[in-house]
Length: 217
Image 1 (cartoon, helix red, strand yellow):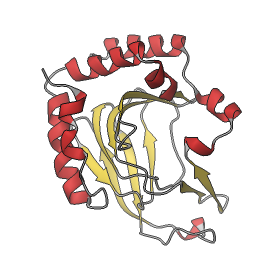
Image 2 (cartoon, rainbow, N blue to C red):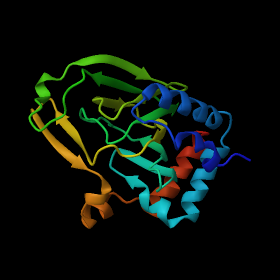
Image 3 (cartoon, rainbow, N blue to C red):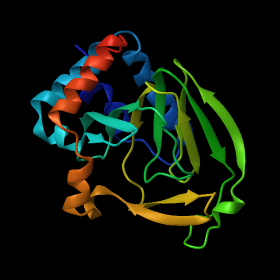
Image 4 (cartoon, rainbow, N blue to C red):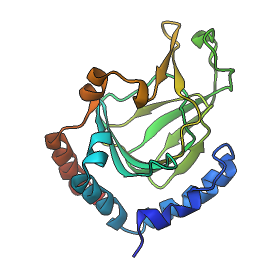
């Protein structure tokens, strides 16, 4: 029987700056997820049974993040992202390199010209160099320094495999207002912010109903 631990073992010694290697490794993992619903169902069962995983799940007005697996020793994490109506984000980078596989729905994905991430970066100078329509069955890998933004259709579901945090902060930019600001990982969040985004049991059960209806599980 495949477990998350042995499935993800190949990721433990990866160089997460080498996106070619990360992409090759995570595509093999996604192939196991797309042959059936067992692995997603197993991850959701783990959330029910493991308070630590449940505490890592997050709910926002237009996005839910379900943590199916988390390895505190390496920082490797598998998440299910469920996009709500009106989802769009500002150009930003991430603290970690990740790979994503679209299970349902689609989103418009803009990737911007590489930039030196610093306090004085002018968002008005951002130029998109690639626009993709991410659809079911498609996967991609993004380096933690890359700047991108997504506009998703309601009910889009993606599977995300992320590596260890490479920095303690990431830059968010608003190219309409010209503002840019740093955001930090959960270790630096206030208790109030952590509580505000923590997923409730009722929301978790509602998401299970959606995933069942959509035949993700």
